[in-house]
Length: 545
Ligand SMILES: [Zn+2]
Image (tube, rainbow, N blue to C red):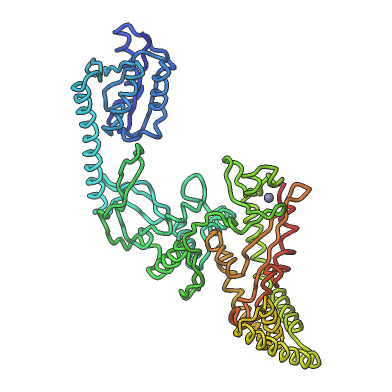
């Protein structure tokens, strides 16, 4: 018979994996079974609660299903797992594949052929799980006791060294790292986004916690670590294996909260500033530095992709939508081309998400940073609007006569209807003419443009873009700028260019009410159209291949 071996170890005190393999081999040999090296499966340092990321066990189950051996030998049932239901299931699967299971510690075969046999195995698997629970509880208790004394319990925290004192380990402030921690908090308090902080530190070759260098995730945990304000908090989470994953954790009431002033690196004031800022950012709400709300995210839309619903296909005019065809191609694709194929639209190539997003954000940024151009566009447009609405005095007299004539006609037609005479569409038509004419005769309000106001507005909206790695926030800025559509057209050279229009009315004179509304039929020919277009077309096209 062909035998396989399975060995697993997670705890320090357990028998080494290689020792388990040796013993299992010896047991197989005593039975006259042969063990092929390819059929030895090992998981070293993996919890028995782990059923998803346990390569050795996964391979064993697959090989058993493929009938690569007749028997599998292991130390005891705990090796298969310490989560009773999942262990039961996995064992049943192996046995039903025609493979027998033997445990060398007691020399027994694990039988699952009758209800009572299954019940016996279940009891042993239950005991294995209970043992793990008890160990976990004891470990937590022991660590809480340590933490209560102010002793270090886990891995090193950036900013501190771990020093062995007597039989325990204590933290000491590491001056170099402490200076970096302070700097990171100060940058965050100034509203600099995590990505920009990461880039700055990486550019300056500032030593990072861990081997992988500075990353947004590291910063996120660093900025909420209570230790930096001199408070030891232990046990905020506990292990809670779920879905066959041993590494899952759940929130818990902290076991220990302890003041440790000698470990303080950050003042309470700076801490509070950062937390307030981060909370506001997390909520995706745009706020001014004094906390005033600037914009709200679109209701019910978790826009993880900046241009979904905004980007349009330059070939067919259809929507471009983000799609991840595989790990490498994260692109926006024309929905018409996707759903109807080349018959619907020939633009099947897609636009790289990162590049397009970045180019659009850069264009927005340039637009908002260029106060002179925006002011010029706004004033030019206001002048055009004024000219278009001006009526010469001669024209006005004629128009007033015409109004009088039309009013008389409308009055006659109304009388006719009351007498029951047919008038067809005539009343409707004359009424429409009259309305149009009256509209032209209205004197336009003088447009009150305020350059100081514009400057304040531009600065207000450029801030979120500087921090802007957040598509939800960037979309709020775009909405405020009246950008609802960006057309992306593929270039014969293989690149692409985009253009879109903005409505900058909200940026001047206190809002759209006091400044000219864009003509309703051509909303994208408003002032910003020109501003967004030249700023980005060349750059974006050159960047892609
Ligand atoms: Zn298309």
